[in-house]
Each structure stands twice: as C-alpha cells, then as structure tokens.
Length: 108
Image (tube, rainbow, N blue to C red):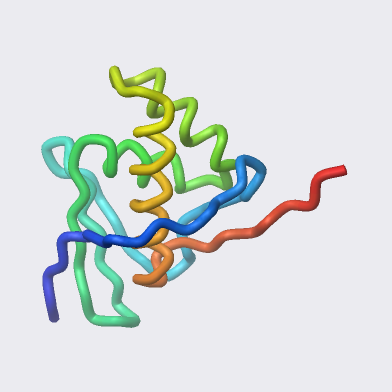
C-alpha cells in the first residue's frame, strides 16, 4: 500500500455546472480535521487537510463545481480566481486517482 499526498501541475476545465461526487469504492474518515481516504481497489491511501478535507466532505453527495467553489469561498478568505484554480487542480488530482466521478451537465 502506498501513501500519497495529492499534488499536480495541470488544471482541467470543470465547468460550473459539472456535477462531481466521490466514487463508490473509496472508504474515508475524518481524523483531527483531515480526511483520510483508503482506495481498496488501487491499494493506496490519501490524506487531505484544510480545504481538501472540506471538499471531500462535500463530495459525499453530488455537487456542482460552482457549489463547491461557493462553499470554499464562504469558509476561507481567498480570491475567487485562486479558489477556482486550486479547486480545479484538486479535483483533477482526485479524478486521476479514481476517487471522484464527474458528469458534465448539459446547459440550455
């Protein structure tokens, strides 16, 4: 089993209406404000603190990218552009690890 801190350098585009939620297979718990996530399929575990733990907690139910961004902005003093960039980066990392599922909703 490997321990990973999620870090990445590229940022995908998650449109505001994209619906994101935790995949069905990771097992997670919160310990002293940190989300600890076990991926039994991949044999890895991850830890997310601060903003990452908040986002992981929110992802236990389907949320739009915009809802996630609004929650982070409400909880932390951060500029909207920085929040959007960092949130996109975190979600890319979670998606690459197979920990989340993303649906791109059609808008009319």
